[in-house]
Length: 345
Length: 238
Image (tube, rainbow over all chains, first blue to last red; front, side, top):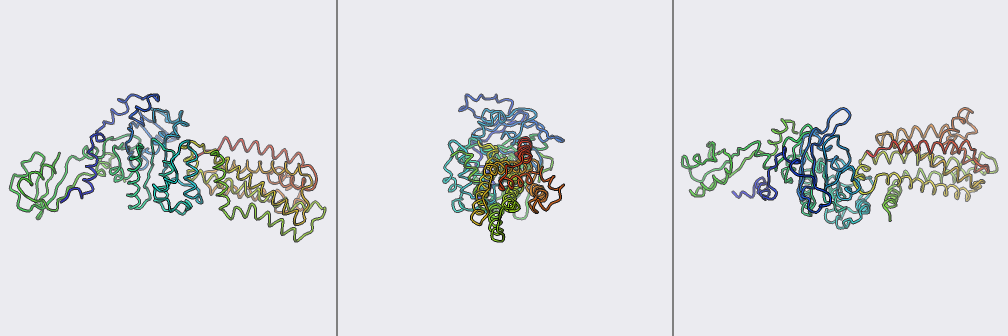
């Protein structure tokens, strides 16, 4: 009966912060925000600006037209099926590739032209990254920290990311989760303002994946903006403040996870077992309720808007206890499938 | 300490953790000198320069045609070079670090061969300046070939395959498997123009007391410049 026990409810509630919770029209974003100049750096709210990005390889177009902005302190998700152009998009942000069209600004800088400046300020974790098999955890962190003028204390990073007891373990002997934690630590060792994490949890077991999610929230807790590339719905739903859904090289939606879901499926469903029979019309008279059905001992109510709030307050007024209460909402999975025309995994 | 030195130090540590690599590049030359030194009694005959020449050429060939291309192609294949490109340190520093380690191992190997040889009864190189010149040019030419292999093959496996092919062709034509004295004339002629053959012959000449032939030094210098420039132009970080 305690709604907070429902993990989904917790997720939504956590995102109710109005500062983060906003709906952005993908058509407007990127165009309406003027380019910031590097000289008013401190005042920049948008740390990544991608406008009409276009990138093609010899025989095919990887990115048709992608626009989005990422604001400071945000966890921004780039979500899409395999081959949608996600990695190419972030590689243009990282300065690894030159766009064929459109513009990319990162911290007010051009990722290609100002690469030397930018690479001291962003930290990157690649999809399927590796290190030499026999390089030890301690050595990797110490080496990478020596690349930066003002690095984090790599010994503290060992502790922070649960690698202290693996400090002398060679890279080749680490588990998938340990490797991933090491790569996150390496991405953070230069005290970056932006961390780009590409397919962070692919290949991890469910527990390691959940642990890693906690770590990503820690990164944001340190004030680092996170650009997260993923094809896992659950990951984007759990972590991201906003998500750009990319399909076949285009942004098909850009919104909060809740916003994406509500766009696709406004309808929700509540099931519960009332402690006493519910009088006719009590619930069906509510504007939020669209239908009511008796299923065995349970009532199944479908509706829109703030359905749960409306139903529970009426029940409370009539001293009816709703046992085994379950709320079923369209998930991000449903939204994703609807948005990408069923091309999802 | 500069990032370059740290990377070179890291590469050196990784090399020392590969027992097979250390055995092939330092252990085997030592074994060759000691075992042949015990079996035979070197007198003034030039044929005895074959053994230090073999020890040096074999080790240089493993370093340059096997370890260097396989390691660098592996780093690229594993995304290590690409990853570095997003840090303030350019991936070329890993390539230079690998070269520095290869040069250091080669130099250590030369010292081992000369010192072990002297202890076991081989006379030291009779033309020291010529020996140093032949050794340095030979090592550079072979490293340039190894770098070009690393530059053009996409994977570590292919680097190993191409490197091994070059290794055997060079060992065979270069008078390393079999002394040049026992090879037919056309093979020694081919060997004169191969990086390992020219190195082997120049090292043996200097050990015997002659200044190396300009042909061999010229071949090695040309290979260093041409293959080195090609490798620099063609090398891809991803």
